[in-house]
Image (cartoon, rainbow over all chains, first blue to last red; front, side, top):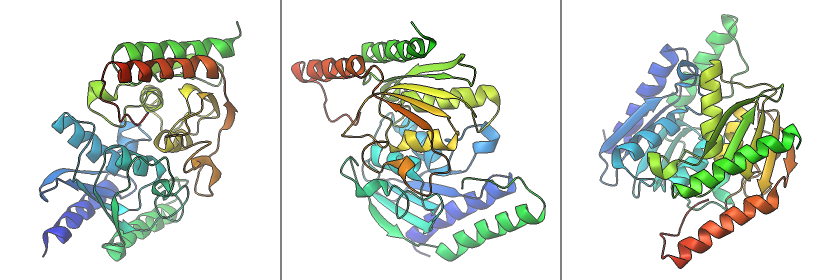
Length: 160
Length: 160
């Protein structure tokens, strides 16, 4: 297994763990310019009562805090679901160099859908984007989660 | 002075305080559906080494944590500078009802500029937007800050 797939596996494991906590199963892993894993997280919105606690936001915040820096030049972000506009803008703000993206999110995505945050002049930075990595596994996780929610009379209405 | 202007005054005071801390001077105030102030903050990105610590994000996170909820139905957000795409998406996620917007941000804004986050189908929610409130005061704060930075050989390259 390549280092590349290894980090997406970490993100998928975080997504599974998030689902087990009752969160929408999305996970993220962040590696530095040398490929070393520096942060990993799954969604924690419900747990923290924080609508901004998406997996991507948590790894960016953790890595920036650890580095004592607003920017993570060279960093590579692995995420199981297309980032929303909030996360895409945070990725730009932190100057993440590469985005490895799992499943597409036609409903709430902000990279290939919606506001396409990286496609407009105000984006201070645009990462290299590798789209559709582990797409099948990432989609299966989400589909199972929402099918179970519906089957069990869950709340529904989740944003992501 | 109306209650309306009072909350924008709180946001402006937070922006001034942020500038005094060396942060880009942007402030936000959040009121509940009844108009009661429930959170106020200025930018704290540098202080926290957190590129997501924009004033809007801080008030949304604080109010959601206090309410134990991911959503703030009826809430009104007063912000001195047009929210970026990150903050606009967080506003949508939290179901903020009204956005009172100070100065425009043609460079990094995500509401009337850039990805125009609220203008795309994936936006789960679009607030009522009151644009240009206290625009002159909010712009003057920013212009002074960046003029002083340039004059003083500051870092520059700030996103907002």
